[in-house]
Image 1 (spheres, rainbow, N blue to C red):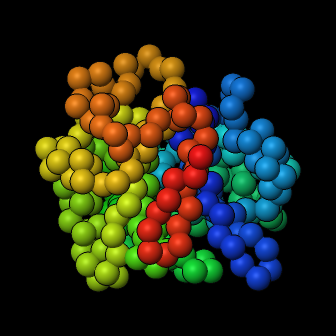
Image 2: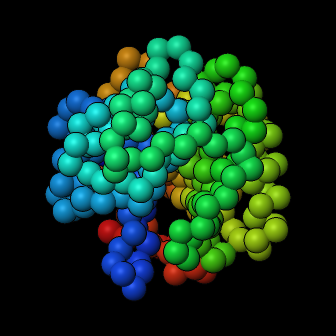
Image 3: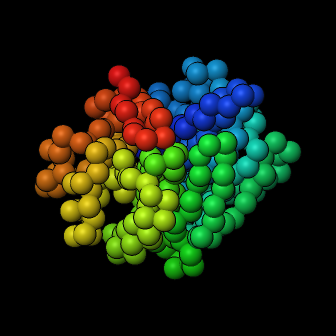
Length: 246
């Protein structure tokens, strides 16, 4: 979803009891594109699970406005607060009966309906928010999507190996991946890896960090989809392939 300089992804899983809504990151808490406004526009009042990659304000502060009117079964994050973080939002949510906050380290798996959520990283804390960033592989049948948050470049190679092992084990294909840290630097193997993925997703808006880095050749890739240009980016999986919905 377009939330400016931040990140938020909404997954909807059909079920016999009605749609199941999953949120991956919550974006910033200010501006015209807040998560609260976008969920209200979709008349969503209940979230099954909220995953937070790391507690930087542009990934988590959207929860501050969201919490009073939205019920969630659980919230999952890595548990490392770090510096310049907004982790104080988690104890506040835990104090509400509608929110259960869990700290999880990889490997951790959660099956929700027909979709498997696999926490790839972190397995241990390194005392850096971008290094301890929660990385989530989401699999529906043979279709897999990787949500990377702000994963640091020096941890990307190890994450890639873990993802490839999971894909081989499940006989799945990686159809889409989010560009870590809003178009920041990539490790050399990720630079090549992302060229092979059908869809490269970039959540970005106006910022003071010159992101995405303008010299990266991937910015001209036909697979790239940017929230600051396309707005809402929609996909649908049938368990065998991922299709972009206009």
